[in-house]
Length: 524
Image (cartoon, rainbow, N blue to C red):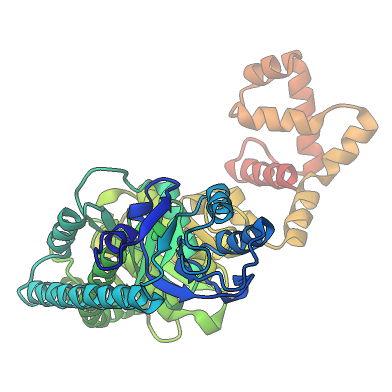
């Protein structure tokens, strides 16, 4: 109840002697009666304190100590019994003025128990009304769910009723519900902060900036792809009945998510069968049947994904749930886990490979706080349905590349999420980068070592000349112009290179070996 409701009761005849501003609008949830000189240890914040000042000798310093304890501990108002001094003493009023706390007098013929009873009765009435309203909301929400209404519609009604906007997102940042209304939208930076904070706590609701997060179902840290209800207001600014309304909506969201989870479990069986066909390189009729069962009857192009966590104790369920949620934002996907293998996904290639990789990095990266190992994902180029087994092989090689090298740089995930396309596999230097460092260094030394020795003795820059010659596709004149030397100098140096390395630069094979060796040498 508000303090103004208490002051307006004609039976109590309370007299507000100091109002620091908006005292009548102060919310009163609890009342505490005391005659302790310093009641601080008994206060928790939000109380209306009543005191007859029986302890008080009349010294202003005692008023300062008492009122300071009220202010320090978050008391919202102070009621003074007038029997002891015949009124509210000036030194009490002055202390309350300095502390910014409302103070009112209680007539000597009005017992504190009457004030307390009034607050308790009003609180009980408010609670009864709130409970009745809550039950009515729950019935409406459950009726809406049973009649098949979408969460967007229910959220829109809630926003219209409360005037506060809300969103439902997943821990990968995928939007589920965005109730229309005025005010801010959730940008990527805000979603990053919301998902990170939600995955690092087990206690809800929590405030993040000027927003409040309510959990939907199990705590988000328990599983990938959990839902979050985000309310457009700080937790401390939301009235209790408004927060209760959103908590009830969160419960309905959990019910809807549970139904979707049941559907996902059914889809997992078709995903498993399609993945098994890819691993077994099934015949076209079996592959076509598995594609149709997985919902790809009309799809033309596909990307194949291979994903694996480095921690085997937290492997397939987490990876599968994470991919499922992230790919819902991209397009239709089937996800499977053949026994003893990585998690495999087949995705409609309509969005393009680079867009798919970027979306996976963004969405999967947000799950880093709950990953107990590094998550590596390889993505094939777009392919036709007759070449899916080959696309899986490419995706697996790309995943292996991300595990063995640092080529898969990710903007999110603090090194825990790595997504690599199969493009680097078309590069010879990238293939060599998959080899252990000693092997690569030995290869470069065997091919180019004689040139280093030659440089030391003759003082000619044979390595730079070789690099320029290969960069200019074997053109003598362009190489000479690039190095600012005469063309005969280039011819002499190239003959020395052939003699020292035993390679014939007129052949593609030998040029390729030299090119790869230079790339390894440059990369260290």
